[in-house]
Length: 199
Image (cartoon, rainbow, N blue to C red; front, side):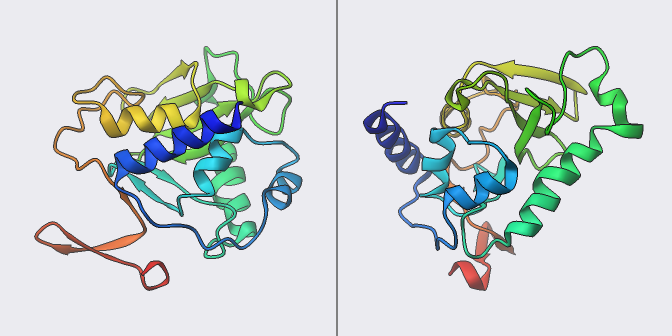
């Protein structure tokens, strides 16, 4: 990926999401990638070097594995391994009629986020270049898989900017504000109070 293109994309994403903050970096990407045994896509790393854990348009949640407020062990257990386990074993019917394998199998699905409704976002880790990995989405509502030839940033940008349901989760988000929100508590009357560590 061209670094200047990646930077412009992240700047555009931050502008679309109304985000002017930063992260509290607690570790580098090498540490995360060694723990996973994989190199991650550059657009995702650039995005998470700018955004902490949080919600995009109240429709997509992503945990930031390099932020100091996130325990890496907990991230690996809850956001990676437990998600993979929930799609395997006795729950293998999720994978019926697909050719997908699950991480850590070569080319397997590696989770990176969720849609707050039980749906999950993955990369299809096929090929040697992680910047070419497609995004795969599993909808709990529709109980089906869809594959998208785009990166994380493009998928999130479309969710932030779409007027109807022409987005990866095929949900009409017209009533949701196009913003990024850190972990917060709803206070009523449309107000949110960020958790103390994010203020």
